[in-house]
Amino acid sequence: MDIQKDIQKTDPLHLPRAVFIGGAGQSGTSTLNGLLDRHRDVLACPFETCFIVGPNSLMDIVRAISDEYCAFRLDALLHEFDRLMHHHLASPRSYPYNRFDLASFFGKRRYHSAVEQFFARLGVTRFPGDGLLIGPSWRVGRLHAPFKLKILTLPSWLSRERNYLYAAERLPREDALRVARLLLDDLFGAVMRERSARVWCEQTTTNQQFADFLLELYPSALYVNTVRDPFDIALAHAGQGWSSDDFFLVCTNIRSRHERWFDVRRRLRPGSFCEVRFEDLLDAPDRELSRICDAVGIPYDASMLEGLNRFGRAPAPPEQRAQHAGVDLNTYRRVLGPVAEQLGYSVP
Image 1: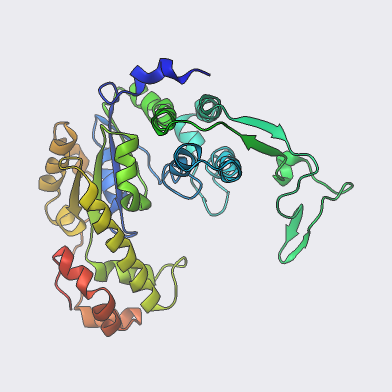
Image 2: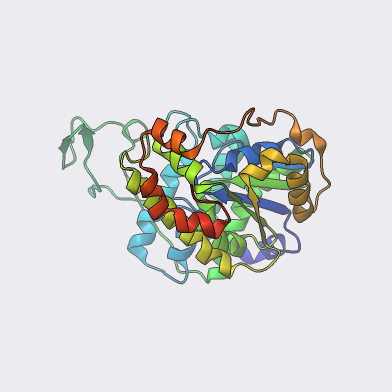
């Protein structure tokens, strides 16, 4: 398929405005996304999409098919992306993407058609890999059959066994970016136009680590980074089932994410991003949301404040909160203290 005919559509001058939200987990990304979703001119996806800069994402495919071309790596990425889009993110019961049903949000027919169009524009060929087994044919706990069972093999639609290999020629990076932009426009842009909105919004916490790629992919976008006191983030992470029980590891992980953001932020062009503090968003939401609307280029809409949850009382002292969470305050001071100071927060 000749993608050159779609160049005008993917030119930054013709792209609709977009907002990407990112930040450390528990820093207020979902809160901000929900507030923007109440704006009459904004279409916001209500949950993290996970396919633009997540594992086996658009970003990985753009790299693997262009300046980091590798046929074997591209095959693996296309397979995982195919499975991610058509299965994991299109079913509310697929671990670890529970409740992430993008197909229902965008419309099932539009969603699956857009994914197939993306593969076609890349020039991807799927071909049967009969006799080639990548991974066990079946697995129950730690038991698995490392070979293909001719009699007991389940149908591919049920067992999800890999039956296809993927191949595509190398593309110039800009062409790969254009194809990725078209996928976003076929999904976000189409629904945005249907709802007579002017801006679409996507939030995924890992956007923070790849904001430079997001702005290369979608030059007309604004990246909004949410910031919160690292002490509150550390306490929130320590209470999550997906986080380590070792508070030192929790703090080092948060520190690494912020250090990565500091590096990325230095490469972003002025005016392409803004930062909002979670505490300011709660204390002065009208001021902060007005500032974000100005940066996006849309009028402030007071209806965004409806349903905003604010803290009804001042938080307990840090020592009391640390003791209640069963964490070592000295570990926080040693590991995350410098990051908190760099962000302008006091260290307890």
